[in-house]
Amino acid sequence: MKWILLVAGLALLAGIWFVGFSGPPETTSLSLAPASSGSRPSAPQDRSGWLTYHGSFALDGVAGSSVPDAPEKLWTYKAGNRVEVTPVGADGRVYFTSAKGGLHAVDLKGAEVWKITIAQDAFTTPVLLVDGMLLVGSGKGVLHAYEAATGKEKWTYDAGGSVQGTPNRIDLPGGKKGIMAISQSDGAIHAIDFDTGKGAWKGPPGERCDGSAGVGGGLIVMGSCAAALHVYSTEKGEKVRDVPLGKDNEVAGGVAMSGSIAFAGTRSGKLACVDVAAGKVLWTNGDGQGEAFQTPAVGDRIVLFGADDGKLFGLQRETGKQVWAFDTGNRPLSPVIAGERAVVTSGGSLFVLDLATGKKLWSTSLSDDATSPAVIAGMILVGGDDGTVTAYGRK
Image (tube, rainbow, N blue to C red; front, side, top):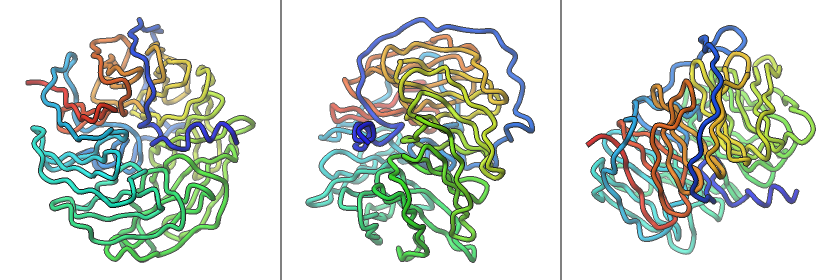
């Protein structure tokens, strides 16, 4: 598919390509009721850090801390090469990759702790941080595991082909800790023993997958070129079902999970809310124009998603009805919910919005291209094509 080729090289929802602009929000006054039976509340998630490019293993984009209404620049770290994928972090450290095979660790003041470079290869996936380990895939289809404290490599796993989306944490049969990765070309899921790096199970080939799988409720959920969500059981290591989303609703971005409720944007600009345990589409919002291939953020009352028409939408979680729309002027990347604030990058700019109304509270210009934001310990961190990672927060 020609459209897939346009996104195959991106770390989705953490992607790039912007032109700076700040436009006024469009607002609609609606009552935001808490989620109820139609859209179940989130299962408990680890909010102590930013463990994937979009927060928790559920990829729900919800931070464990709030951010200031008008953040100040705290520090900038120069990586030496482009930073194209959102940083992760926990326990006083921040980790990220740079072009030409760099992997970096800095402290919360931006001081370098360690850095490594892999020879004759480059990292192509977002970084996963779990239990003191960093997991990241390379262009040659190799998943690397590094000790977060030292950068020392512990093991490698050959997926046999390109890995595009983020690795993620799963539970293997028998209660062992595992890591999953997706073969981009055929959509096959590889389940890997966390401690040894040995393969535990592999799903059957399916459709090409350019996005990332969310994990929740004992399920792995991924989208593909088949215009469907594919649901796997982590306990049994097998596919449970496919949930069709309809014509022109291919999914090339990340799937955000809240328990067994999945949220995914599509090629036609729609956002789908799906009960994957029941195999039922709960609602679909069609307000977006153009592709919606970034990962949505899923709060208790409101869901955020962006489309290529430049707008970031705030939707009622229960019904999918639009609450507000903010025109970013370019392609908004995977948004973040931090307390009562929404954080998003678009067009080389970083925005902080009021979550309830979509009103812009603050913005600043970044580099020409930037990653989607991470929120770690009350700081917003963004990587740029100028080879930097910059932190914003309260001095």
